[in-house]
Image (cartoon, rainbow, N blue to C red; front, side, top):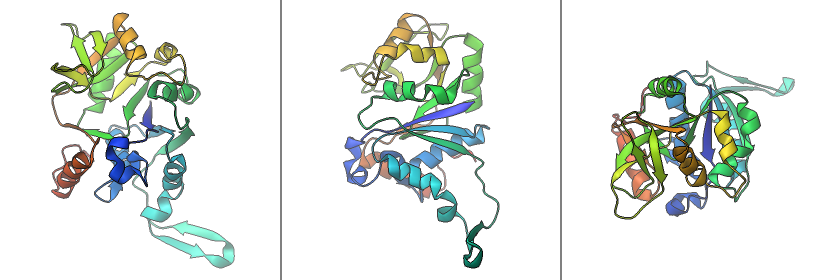
Length: 256
């Protein structure tokens, strides 16, 4: 199963960092947040990634192209025009980086990478949030209910999109960022059947609006309830909180 990561946004609420970097490359500890997200999936046995780039796409591409030279010891054989990487890499990832456009919305980015996921279900998440979601349990839950999309739902005070969930765990309504409303929210960490991409019309469509709202109306959206750790990195304060958790040695999302 492939993992699609939305990594193309401008990250304007974290402008202190994102003036120079795309948000997924903002560090938590000595590694960018996208590395932490990928390690979470890799710990569940998923090592094939499709990254939807946009803002400063060249920097994301450079990070992965230069991954070995930046993270491993090397030996340069000048006379042979050859570089040798020393040691065994911990990551066995295949990373496809797709420039999905500077101004493309989240739904449009997903539609643009449809050919890279083929006819199989895929995982999908945002490149700016961490959680200790049980990825294997999430996938098993998705396979058990037969709906087109599973969204990981997390409790929140209501500044994010609200999910109405019935007794069978079906999402009966998806409504984005209402005022003064409490409930379960969209925490990312989706599992998506390829047929769900048909709900996205074009580049101007946000995944969180029309597609998820229509999927909920059609009874095709289910929620995997997660009451554990979940933390987006929307602001500098968020980044500092995640950084402090990592440096404490007790980061809740670390499962590797």
